[in-house]
Length: 116
Image (tube, rainbow, N blue to C red; front, side, top):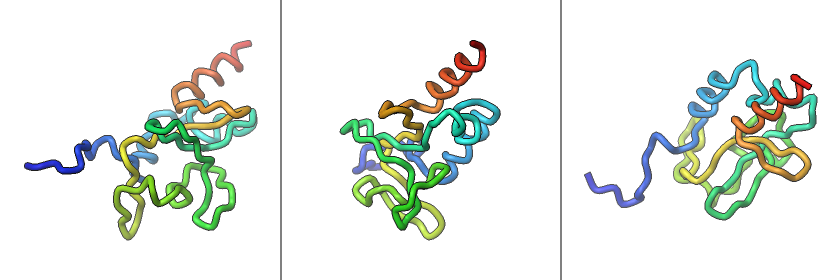
């Protein structure tokens, strides 16, 4: 099969992968409910450019959870009827004090914070 786009569909960020990540990090600081009280905001990072985007609803209002609909169209590989499919360079995470944390980094930061 010719893969003209040179990507692996398993690496694309979709509403389904966000749900899967939420299941993996449930009960930790790797989900919004586990870190919101400490000031973390859901965000996405374009790992190619390093640009970080706070999670927003499609109308631009800040979202309390990861919402693909508010991301720029330039990051979109394809848009389906029920969910967006983002290029494989986009990862979900959080921003705290202008620093981006992956889900794992946020979970670790919260675990350290609660231990001390």
